[in-house]
Length: 147
Length: 147
DNA sequence: TCTTATATTTGACCAATTCCAATATAGAGG
DNA sequence: CCTCTATATTGGAATTGGTCAAATATAAGA
Image (cartoon, rainbow over all chains, first blue to last red; front, top):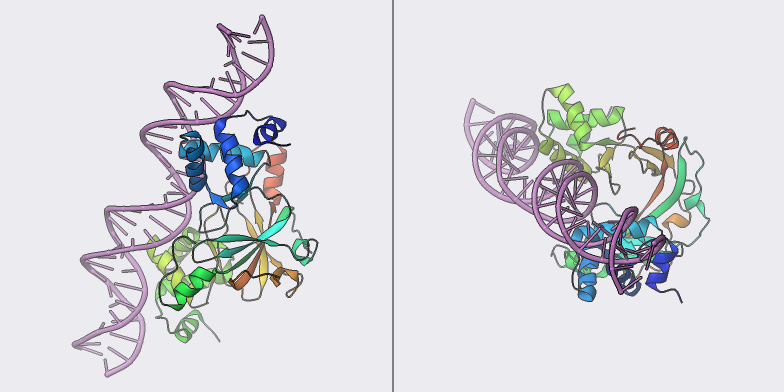
């Protein structure tokens, strides 16, 4: 069984309470912001600073244990899902859901002219309004700050 | 002939020197940041405040005269190109080039499960390293701040 | 030309994130 | 088990990209 501490050790990372807690938290919920992760980690181990959370998430990201989803206009979020997928994002509140790529090797990942770039990945984001923000805008209210 | 002022008038926007200059600037160069646009506008009309530039770019964007390209981790940039296309972005310096969508109605824009969202558009970003940042990283240097 | 709605300016403010030095701690070696 | 050292965490300050609000200036219709 691959517990959080095992995963950390496998990547040559020190096993600290904060890192284990962060991995556990991301196992139960996807697309959490740094702040949400810090709060959830605090509930488990007592306390962590925001800066430590930024730093540990950087470490986990560099080790490939989590992925950072960084959409313009909203704070970065982190996820553990390993399989290839894209995102459906709400422009109103930033709410994020996974979508399976309908064609893993479809036109999305092909590029006729690389123009000298070393292309590493293709990111596909479907932008729209989530159910909540749809009704909010329909009734004249501004989209809610959080989903 | 559709001059900048004609375009503005057509959209019911007032014709001001700053707006005309901004449109002209974006006609000669693509993917400029607010700051770069402010500087270029100043060269043409003497002076504009950064805030005015933010504001006028908002107005031009709302009118559909320019498009805002907003990639995470880098300041927003603006472009006038009208035809559908995607972007190839450098994760090192943020340098941006247009790429034609290889299949306008390919899998990119299809989505099996909308999950209640009102989907408005699909954004495809190819991330990689530009020629300059490739050689910079190859020679051990950090990628340059600007392309 | 006069008027008024709309732009621009100025300056304060904000959130997300990074940087730095000081302190604490995981885990290897004895 | 204890010590040592590299690595994590903390706390505080700084940065960046951008927004907000009030005062002033200006485009364009009457």
